[in-house]
Length: 274
Length: 351
Figure 1 (tube, each protein chain N blue to C red):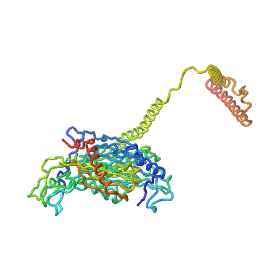
Figure 2: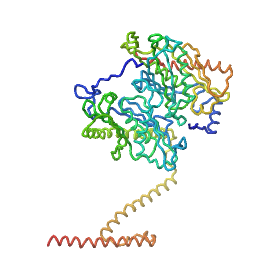
Figure 3: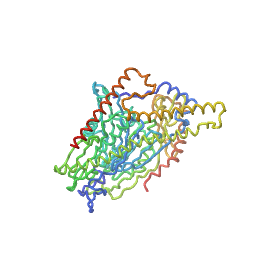
Figure 4: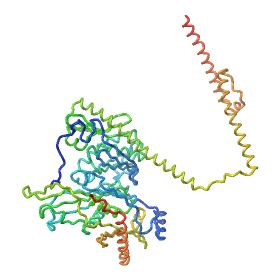
């Protein structure tokens, strides 16, 4: 495995630190300002739903596929949602092909929790016949260009792809003993739109949506998933930095504000078919 | 368990009016569009939309080889990774590369290698990453077309651009550029990659039943279709630089506007006179220069071997003068030789 980590020169590092201490960013943003978001859905005709999301220059392409399978024995009346992320080597000279890395698995699980724990999709609606057949939804995110903050971009891509998805309806055929198509194709019911907001930290300075050079020099970061009811539904701390309780409470409040603002700006519901 | 809605598997590939299901003629390629420089982190990148195929390619390198033992001391190595996204096909594909992915990576690598100058990159590697975002038949061909664009975009020297396109046979008719259904239910499939400079084939696979005559027709279609796609490749590559040119022009115009306007009022009288004198002098010199060449050819045509009368010639070194005199002598000889020939010819004719 290659260990090609992009090295930030000490000059650039000092410059970024100096700017952050003055409350400025290397790309001219405010400390709590997101980059521009561009979303395009249904780029892939073979996927049930798909979304191509740009956060500044960071790009994630996400597709939704479905399958019919047996439910887990502890939740016999619930469908399954699986989020996967691929750090494809297209995206950056730092990524290499091969089995998924730790980061990639962590990202997928963070996005997954954001979706599952917000009641974004009611998993009981994904059940066709208890104990026999349920829908399995695969939400696969491909990192296509890496310029920092993949988590938030992937979260937007995943929810946009789910919103744009159309899944064939199913009924249980007891004679055949399997699920069959009922002739309809309908969109998924999305109850909540979760968003992920990531804060980075260098020394005492906290900022939102880290840009690549900031991400490479930062001590650590923390990602919040926020639902539409202004609740925090999941938190993941990355990196070596430590946070005080006051800081965490303060930025949770900030995350809710930023998420509300983003949700209004993006208007993700417009990607719903019909 | 299978997915709810299976893919259609009827063998019909033609409409009643004799055209193909998507309205194409037998020798017509699918709509094709491409763009370069789409992935900012990569040295070179391209996206290709060929029919329903959507393919992204990024090129990284030449860079260090890892693991080291793969490096070759006398030449660079090319590594191609063909990967399909899970949602690019009807039934979800497992994310791990399978045997098909590895085989296609290999044939694409061998299609590209002949046009690269790998001997120029000892101990290093060029990596081509191909990601299929939507598959619709003929992905290996479209991938090669895209890889060629991305390599050109990365500025890696190539002998020629390469274009991939397939021919095949469905319902006993030879067809160009098979779609997904034609590929699956058709009788034969001949994916090929054409090296555009000398029209040689650098990738060739075949699968099905076809007579030699049909193969011949297939190759005719392939070369015709490749030319269409090649022109679009060139447009995309030029387009990128034209866009940069336009941008630069726009920026320079905007910059010119921001500059403080220089005062264009009458300058002070003494400086004015000096400037005017200088310009007059320059004009005079220019006139002389213009006159010189006019005179010289006349002299040459009239008198040939005579020395040019200008004093500048004296400054020349002896060697140069020698050479000049030799040349003049030769010219003179030629004129002499020519003259008698003409006479003899004339004489011959008269005789």
